[in-house]
Image 1 (cartoon, rainbow, N blue to C red):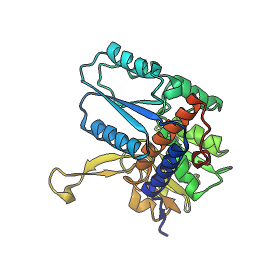
Image 2 (cartoon, rainbow, N blue to C red):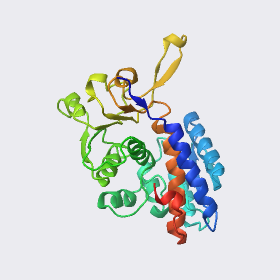
Image 3 (cartoon, one colour):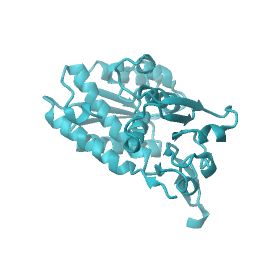
Length: 297
């Protein structure tokens, strides 16, 4: 058996096209502000990609780049100013921050109505309570990918490996909203392999390269691999590296009905869902009707 590849790039392109169509239907132009502190190379790439995608969707992109030595007080002041700016609809603080900055304190300064990454305590509380609000982008992307294979998730056994506040916990709650039966597994879970084998949908978000092997997967399951891990690749030359997921792709693809690759699976969905959240935030703040192109997602 060889599982279907869930093409995250194609599905993300579809979401982005819906966002662009929605933006054209709005009475104004939404704006997304991204705050980057320091010169981390990976973060710079991410911020540039987000800015490009925002502009391509027809929205305004504001990039606030601050030096690594920026004080916590100054950063909080900048985030607070963006929160108060009526022309800004969404704000994303690029993580991780330099070590001298407290992420929780910075996020606390962010207006929850503009929290397009769904990371504030208010956003998390709304998710737990089932109230309307902005949801974390990567977990939303996981649900959208799973629904491309199984449109009705009601009653499905979903196992999420990982309990982080960025992916694991919110993903579990989002699948629960879809009436799935959800298990959160982690490093202390007894007989983790057998827990995973009970999953109709397995979401791997643990941050350990190729930890999930083929014999962890029930034949016919859907596998969503959130992991992006850089590992040595001696076959490509001395000192070379490659990206792999949390799932051993070659083994899992022989068992699963469908599987996301890494890279090329969940990653593209994160930016697409960020753009979607920006439009939803603009509509909620400005009293606009959510365009049909997004309401169906």
